[in-house]
Amino acid sequence: MGKIVYKRLKGSQSLRQRLLLSTLRSTAVLIEDIRADETWPGLRPHEVSFLRLLEKISDDCTVEINETGTKLKYKPGILMGGKHHVHDCGVSRAIGYFLEPLIVLGLFGKKPLSIRLKGITNDSRDPSVDTFRSAALPILKRFGVPSEGLELKIESRGAPPHGGGEVLLSVPIVKNSLLAVNWTDEGMVKRIRGFTFSTRVSSQFENTMIHAARGIFNRSLPDVHIFTDHRAGLQAGKSPGYGISLVAETTTGCFISVDTAVSYAQGGEEGAIEETDKKELMPPEEVGEQIASGLLGEIEQGGVVDSTHQGMLFLLCALCPPDVSSIRVGKLSPYGIETLKNIIDFLGVKFVFEPDQSTGTVKLTSQGCGLQNFSRKFS
Image (cartoon, rainbow, N blue to C red; front, side, top):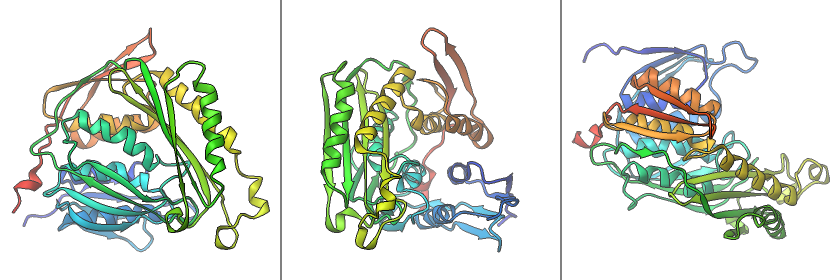
């Protein structure tokens, strides 16, 4: 065995994505100065949890963290995939934080991946599990990922601060590589679908959110169906909360999504709500109106995906064979811009930008790096 050459990086920004690209490219990384100057230096609990997750689905992967957590050495192994994995995501970030990289890594494993993830299913920071199911999974199908074996089941809900949710993710493998796409027509919105959820609060909160959201949509679109998902008992997790996830489907098969969740920072005994917390919460009517306006804003921006999924779209294009992929997005999100920088750094793939002044959208064209599923070839 030759000496391992580490790609040297600094800082905590894009840590999750750097580790994802490092794994796909089989590039060992040495990351220094991770929040070295902060009051609480080093890796955060969710970042350590993500590293443990990489260890679970890989063989011969090594992780070294120094005492202060400000220096990380990571050598990727072979992506094995496999069934019956279980991972506790903790409560510092939601399950959505782990889902995006996990779905992409699962495609390039030796065997199809099946994993149970425990933690927070819905919060206001990360994409909810509902959004992943209704908007992210259809994106994968565009790139030739088979529908069979691609599934996300929500077995129980979990709201902050204590979580208690569980989802079951299944990801098939790509036989050789992804397919390049020509996806530039977002079409017109033909229907809106959605889910509300409530845990350890009155189910009436959901009806209020739906009524408020429909009040905004019904002026312009009659085909609006929002389903309720009230959970009780063990399926309601450990904390009270409620929220809504909406998806607009277009005539060309694009899915534009938004979501939000409202939860109590602290609860009383057995999930009872303290009087002091009630003041901090946004009323369900306001939640419904705000999320409906948010979806209209995403639709107005244009593009074949919403701003949340730009990073995932760019990454899949970059992993395609060396054919030309063309896509159209609305205003570039900060996460999308960060993703483009990381793609150049790790994969050497550059995108050509063509801004369209009339629509305010941007057409991006790229030639993929041709990543193949080599994990299958290891016996």
